[in-house]
Image (cartoon, rainbow, N blue to C red; front, side, top):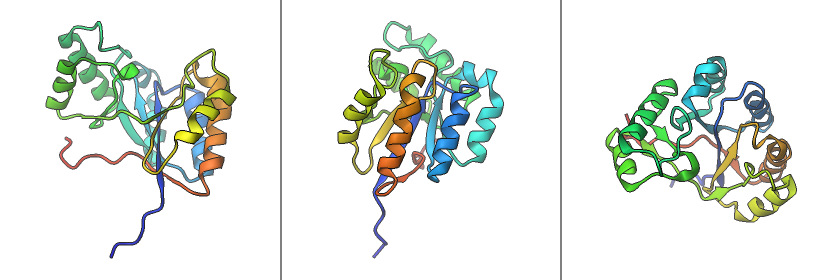
Length: 190
């Protein structure tokens, strides 16, 4: 019989890399021996390639998040396909998360036909909402956390006022019970 696996959380960070926020996130994660997955915008990878190397060296997972953070709804499918391919070239990974979690059915089919694994979430922390406080984000997030949860945070300036408190609270609260892992990659992915 295989040994019991400890409960696990999958922390994911969208919209980076950012020159100061992403390294800060890495420091917070390292303090808890936590691994995470970073869904990177291709244009940001172009600006800060050394941060991507640092994430890889630390054992974090990478995914891509289009080249320019385009919302699928309102974007022509051929243009969306090109955004996905450009982003994937900057952040080579079989994992893809659509910005805003929005894309058409046809766009989803195209992404899958290209061989990418679409990754959504079950816990959205709301750290990107300017009207939210860190306390309200934590009050929303904490009751939703369970074994296997995929949690979305953002390593971006927009989220920073909430993230700088929310991430330490989440790590401290969950560390005694959960392991933090990068997302697994499907064996059928490229």
